[in-house]
Amino acid sequence: MSGETVRTGGCQCGAIRFRITGDRLEGSICHCRMCQKATGGLFGAAIGVDDGDLEWTRGATAAFQSSSVATRGFCRDCGTPMTFVWEPGYTAINAGCFDQPDMLTFTVALASDHIHPAVPTLAEVPARPMFDTPEAERAYAEMVSYQHPDHDTKYWPKGGRR
Image (cartoon, helix red, strand yellow):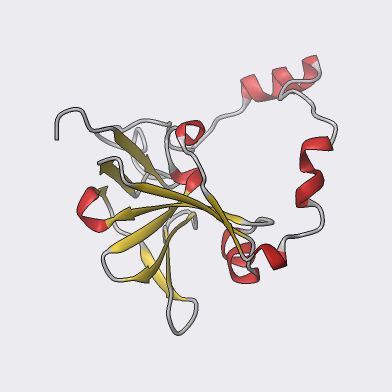
């Protein structure tokens, strides 16, 4: 196991956490309507991993049978859509659930005949920084976030459930 990359992640509230060891990850973007609805986005972005390389370190996903061949996993506490299982022994984890999603790569776009018309133009949409005004920066500084941080914690949330 030495030398293998370790990736961690979880749901938004921290009730579910995972750890992946190994380097066989398959990144895919899926444009099918089912992935759009399941993720609440214009497409699904997921990383496929062998179950032998996946360890659930806190909690477990609830399941929704989204079709006759696929099951989707989600956090029953915060609702974060987390997994897609099509074949036994292999789990696709939604990319946004990873603590470091910027370290992921994608090698295939599925259901390309269902790409939402806006997707090809997203890079052309005018960009704004997170804090484009002093008011926005102040409001963010005053906000109390209940989201789990992007790293493993021994306990979460601090001080118990809200």
